[in-house]
Amino acid sequence: MKVRNTNKLAFKQAKLAVLIAVTLGLLFSAIQISFDFKNEKSRVDTTVLQFLSTVRESAAHAAFGLEETLAQRVVSGLFENKSIVRGEIRSDLGSILWTESRESSIHSHHFLFDLLFSDEETPYSIELFVEEQSELIGVLTVWVHSHMAFVDFFDRIVITLLLGLLQSIILAALLMAAFYYLLTKRLVKMTNMFSVFDPKTPNNVKIETPSPDTLDELGVLLTVIGQYVSTQEKHLAELTKSEEQRRLSEQRIKVFAESSSDWFWEADSKGRITWGSDMIDAKSGRAFTNIKNLTREEIAGSLMSDEKWLPYRKAFNDHTDIKGFVYSYLGDDGTIRSAEISGKPVFSEAGEFLGFQGSASDITDRIQSERNLQEALLQAEQANSAKSEFLATMSHEFRTPLNAILGFSEMMRAQYFGPLGSKNYSEYANDIHHSGKHMLALVNDVLDIAAIEAGKRLMSYEDIIVLDLVKDCVRNVEPAALSQEIELTYSVPKNLPTLYADRRSITQIILNLLSNAVKFTQENGVISVMASVEEQNLVFKVIDTGIGILPENLPSITEPFSQSHSDPHKAQDGTGLGLSIVESLITTHDGELNIDSVVGVGTSVTVVLPFQNTNII
Image 1 (cartoon, rainbow, N blue to C red):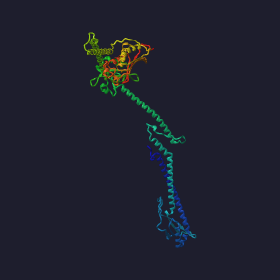
Image 2 (tube, rainbow, N blue to C red):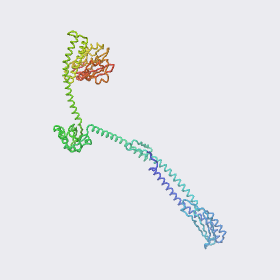
Image 3 (cartoon, one colour):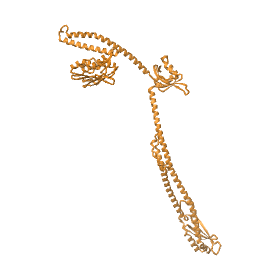
Image 4 (cartoon, one colour):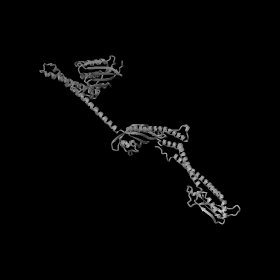
């Protein structure tokens, strides 16, 4: 805020200086008037006496000769002096020979210093003698009115006082201006400058230091203050930075502490719990008052065997770090809880062991989750084993009747024992044989999946020439492709390194991918098989221009019995296990399977298999 230019130090000094100047001016004027009054009074006395002396002889003759006319003329002549208001001539015997006064309505003047004077008339007397005689013949007396005698002096007093007052006013104005220019203006500027000063943000004060040529006491003070503020700015900036770093450090430690543990604890040299942080009651399931001064063995009771306590006791007795020790105890609500603790030994300056300080976390839910997971894994393993055993058993059981169905339906189709008698029987026999083959393929696929998942499928690893393998696979699928007027091509470099893998599995992978491509590619379509080396891996790609796979089906396309297309006429030819078997075989060889597809454009399937025990050419 801006400071008002009143009641401040500089203005108080200016007003005090003006008051002193006015007072001294009036005092000196009064002293001067006093001296002037004395001089004026002496002048009046001298003037009146001199005037009386001029008429002394005439008055003496009037008194000597008792000449009233002369006496009257003498007294009347006295009134030529404005200050004389009455005159009389007395004989030596005291009798009044003549007396006369001015008119009673004498003008009286009242001035500033009326109290110093009296309105009374002041008498002046002079003795009368004649030259021929030395004998006193009378007394001439006149009365002088004070105001009338000093009227000019009083006028001079008024003028003197007015001039003195005017001088004081001019002097006061000059002093005020001088104080304002030399002190007040600069003090007000400094005050306004520092009125917004905040110790927390000193940089908001812009201090204008004077040039060295105009440097005076205030300039030196302002320069020193500016240097101090500048230093404070640096100190405050450093302090703010340090404070921010400290706050961030404390926040970081707090976050780390809260994220890594639930509560903190201290134990004495005997292992008794002596202190716990605020969260111990909420997180541990035990009120601190119920465990204070107890050892952990006492808290756990019979829930922990001596064997489980060995790591904790060893670290405590050896005064080494306790790391991730887990123990169980009974909570205040009667449930069994588990906690994981870590701590470090504490020593005095003299090296005396004082106890431990550390952190702890409640892991009851984690322990229970691990138990549940173990039980679930055990149940899953049991279910998987039962499933595999069931599939193996049922698949073998299926094969026996399926072989009979296929054998007899084949005989009926070939009409080994003569015509069947009706054309419908031949169609039925074809349908039975086709369904039987489909069932047998399904059983074989199920057996493959069960064997792969159970790890019971026999793998015979060998060096495989990739070009020969691809040719064999293309040759097997080529008749089906030609029947649908599909162009089938392959591109495999001759210098590819051999692949160390199970030949049967790799063949099954490529055949399944090619069969799917033929199945879902329309007439006059194109299917391409490519192989290359990328980053020490063998990469197979099967690309077709078929109908594609719906985006919502891609995530589940490799799941068992999943169909890539909703067309029943297309789906009935497959078991829905082909891609599932392909993915399982690729996973067994530590490979990867990627499928990209656009509906109406086609599908691209990429198989990445790592080379093993080979030297790349």
